[in-house]
Amino acid sequence: MANRTVNLQYLAGAEPIARARAMLRARAVSVVDEMRELVAVPAPPFGEARRSAWFATRLQEAGYAPVCDELHNVIAAHGPLDGCLVLAAHLDTVFPEDTPLTPRERDGRIYAPGISDNVRGLAAILALARVLAEVDLGLPRTVAFVGTVGEEAAGDLRGMKHLFREGGPLRNAAAVIAVDGSGLRRIVHRAVGSIRMRVTVRGSGGHSWADYGIPNPLHALTAAMARLASMPLPSRPRTTLTVARMQGGTSINAIPAEAWAEIDIRSEDAAVLRRLDEAVHTVLTEETRAARVGRHGLEVDSQRIGERPAGVTAADHPLVRVARAATRMIGERPELIASSTDANVPISLGIPGIAIGAGGESGGMHTLEEWYSDEGGAEGLERLLLTVAGAASAL
Image 1 (cartoon, rainbow, N blue to C red):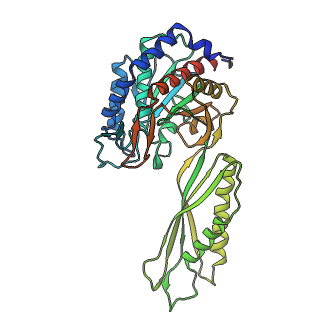
Image 2 (image 1 turned 135 degrees about the vertical axis):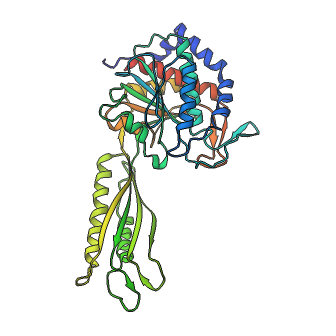
Image 3 (image 1 turned 45 degrees about the horizontal axis):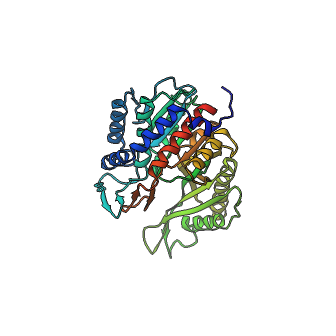
């Protein structure tokens, strides 16, 4: 199906969409009530099963037949998935299993770990799923409502990678809208990719006096890390290289037998990521070879501990244009930004993708003092509806 020009202002004036907007405005308070319930359902890293089941149950109650896969991703749709418009929110949080999750309220704010990231996104998707089950908008594409696992930190986007793998249920989707957190302005259309690795240098080790002169893994590693830290990086596309952690040795009077470092590389450009990945290994190889003394050498190996693909959905793509128009229709100014979200995966595969917030305001992200305020919450739900309706019609 070819992309089409859509007049979102005209589309929004149609009776079904006007009715759906009114329903979402009327239900904005109940959406927040549902957030209070959902935030108390744990979803620690690699432990999303309970929240997945909760989310699937709510979709079933709304008249869908949700499918949960072996990773606990959830998909629900009235129609075929090939060529669908995916509306996705991640189920997981950054918080460990034993984190207290009971919400507290003060000065118009709800405080609870994960209340915005991403309970707000999940609740907004449920609200829209219910409205679309009640009102036939006459959209030319199926809208698939998806809850994903493994978006945060070490999850490494494993839920989306599984869903969009070769032969996966969403591989042939037309486009993806990831709903992540609060806010009314941001439109993430540039996917910040990352490579995270642990590099380890090993030697024979020995006594700091008696064996002095044999190669020291920590010396070689720090020399390599110093070179990497001084390496010039492009500002466009924005690129970063961070030596985040280092460790080595067992005693003050011993030459370490092993030393390791963890490195985080990020860029909006996949080719830049690949070049920096190669540069890290080149520098490590050169420094460990230079440290060799006679028959005493060093070994180096690298373990990939995370990889998120990069890419971009063009600023003038119909999906981005629709999201910008929807943002203006609620009286806000759209902000096009780069970030790492569930949309990284489809974008890297050439499938148009964006990520947007679901309205409201928030702060303290990824801390125990994370909070959400529903100022602008109803507008966020309307913006989401308009973006979905416009995208399903334009693509």
